[in-house]
Length: 258
Image (cartoon, rainbow, N blue to C red; front, top):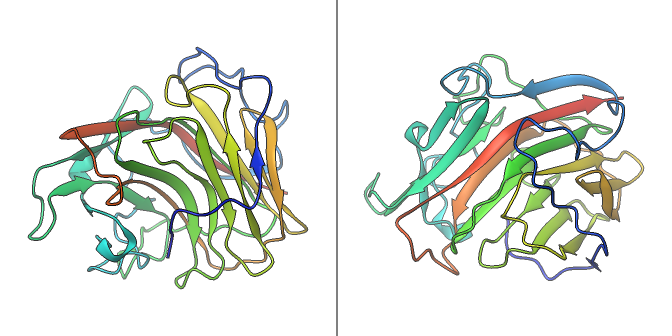
């Protein structure tokens, strides 16, 4: 499935994209006008994750749809890892032995491809969709958050971003389709210190990535079908944590369609 990639392209923007704005600020939104019709959004209002829209089971996870040690993941996915307050979803990884063979719990949420646990209001992305996630990344070593798509076998997988928290400056951006391609974005500033909006335009002619409204990568087209939208914070076996708990925050996830 998903491994740390040798980048096809490395990009550095001369001007830092980071801002000191909080989760409700809008200065780093990707465009002045919405890039199409809003077809899916979660602003994480209320006091709990909306289980009619999200599942923690995914058929991308080989161990009973809740864990995947063969993919260098140490965590077991639980609802308890997900909390919602003040318009923010917090995903917390804990070293709390949630399941035999798993020392860590953490969170994955998916809109489809959920091993028979599909949410009532399942959602899949289409070619041409624009996916954006506004978030604050984890700082402690050993964590691997991402926003990505999954069609059941990985042939159409798209990574809006992957982040390995031992390196606070790099984002890994990948179109896994044949003829796709990848970039490594190298930030001039620490990406964990403030909120960022990371977005991806899913073709159909090309795939383009944005950080805080600035284009940072362009690769090949996307023609996927039936792809779930997934957000997660994995615990990374290759560079394991030195802490017992760490969190990331998500202000919103949105999908626009032309």
